[in-house]
Length: 361
Image (cartoon, rainbow, N blue to C red):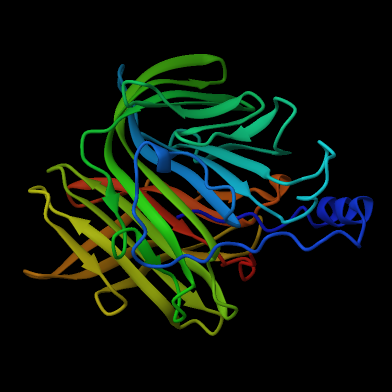
């Protein structure tokens, strides 16, 4: 799960004027429904009829020559704005690509991050059908014939050149990949994960390249109706455990502070999967951090309680460091907190959205 694009309003409004108000209405967005059959590698690729989708990779990395562990996230978004779809102009923004990347470096104590945004086409940006291959200028995430995913992203003061090798089967989230996000059935996404990816490659900081190895998590979601109108944002975590297990958990918060929806999954080291519903998990803040830039107060350390078949288990999520706030407004996305966390017997990522302003899709 990742924060979703919500701006570019001026660009889209201008495109609507240029393309003419009398154009026929574009095709409606497909509705996410239970029972869809996932086919791979096809579903690693784009689903351009849906409103939005994302390829979201997070993980923790150990420098081979020693030093503090690093966290990273790489996210590509594809958005269908339903503008200019019946027009022959190559400039019509039928699909928009956005991306952001960040490196969590405890030695620096804050994120290094960068963003990109462009309309699809012109050889600059696009998301392929049939398999994972999404690009935005010089940034790219794709799947190779041998099954590995490879990524290159770069920003001011850093670059990530990483490969991710699957070691476990695809994990279909929710009910066979149909993941509810609200009280109405259509408030849902098609959602699968690839936890426990073996990560390797190089991280470059201030011109110095370092070989790294570690573990990563790939999330894939596509949807047309993600958040209910009274939703403010969400807390989400994806955790890889040392024994080979994996946990994904989220809660969507109401604007009044209550919980609108919650869910997740736990795959034990033996491969058995427990599906989690709204009554099966709870996030309790243990420590909050106030951003000196946005003024937002984030619950950066939390206790996660999960009801599993053998009883309730609890994990404490502790951030690598508090200041992992990311301001992605330059690429049309919100300000949010997303950072590397440690927990008992594992590590992963925690994402906190809607703490600056309620998230709008």
